Picture 1 (cartoon, helix red, strand yellow):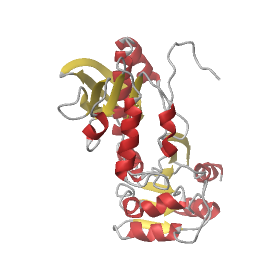
Picture 2 (tube, helix red, strand yellow; picture 1 turned 30 degrees about the horizontal axis):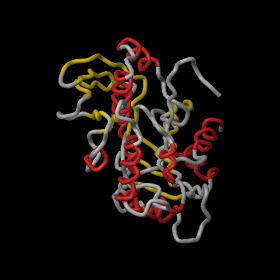
Picture 3 (cartoon, one colour; picture 1 turned 120 degrees about the vertical axis):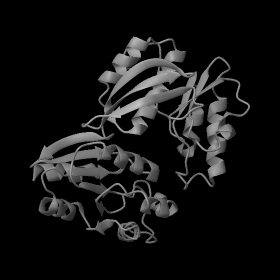
Picture 4 (tube, helix red, strand yellow; picture 1 turned 60 degrees about the vertical axis):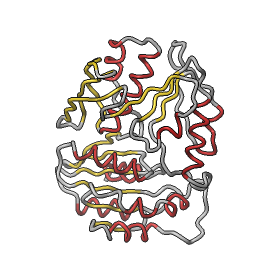
Length: 305
């Protein structure tokens, strides 16, 4: 299926199994580089090597746009033929967001600076600093492709998000339900940080771990990822492509989160979780379903009951 009539083709690439090395982009945007997919990648150095290989596929006439906050950035950018531009929130980045204002609905407005000169104001309809960073990357790519500032401003102002990315599912008895695809510790922290900018009472986070291997490899990181949630419920691990060998269980993760001084519990199946939410949520609360599996069904069932 082809959407639109532009000569540009935009694709979201994944590093899993080095699948992104099949692309030959004119412009590449790297948002983050972290330990993940450790059932394939053996070490973090292996991951960095793959991202460097991806960047090398960009031609001399192209552009690599990369997050300033990536540790050991030069490991990815060294020896590249293409132009490299960074984005972020700190001095030194080519593209910076300054004078950020978080509004009551969680959305943000800010000024974009390019090489320390004010470039344009931006209003987003999606919450969270991670989306501000995403916008900077998109603006950098658009500028390179000679897309006008006006088109960038209008496009970002009208973009209200995508399915399963901080998607508002509905409101029941004053309780707001939001669903998000976050399945890595850093993604969870970013999503919960975005929730803090929305006016509400208690934050209920229902997390469904995605794959047994990821849960085991990042166990301690997951344990520390829910500090901005008030109440955490852990659903059964979503197996996806894997089989359960009995070495990890959702209950164990709930116990690990509890060691951080958080209110975390394992309740078993979806119906048990929905029943618990019905009994304990109050008007003004926010229920956040998180994970790459079918955890969204919990929020949908809660809204239906």
